[in-house]
Length: 124
Image (cartoon, rainbow, N blue to C red; front, top):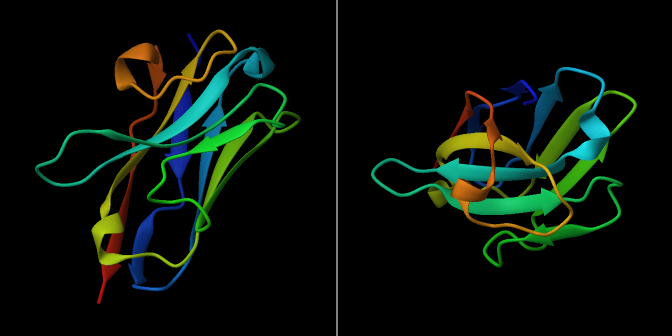
């Protein structure tokens, strides 16, 4: 399995922006389909966005379309989540996850590798 480490979280005002990073260990980053999830206090972990191994194909939760952008840099073994126009309800721990295979998956159970998460707090 790949080791994942997220960074970039913090406190931001509503309407602000953040860029989250997910650094992966090893030399096989390109074999993994990458995704971002988030978990707000008292809620289940939910799918946010995903990017294919090549970076060409992306998929988003309808609630973040137009505001979030997922990408990856395979030369740097890193995935990114650009978050714009943050809303109060965006306060959550954001996790990156990796899985084998090329099929889109939005359920947490379909991902084998997870980072420790990075906290994003949105203030009014």
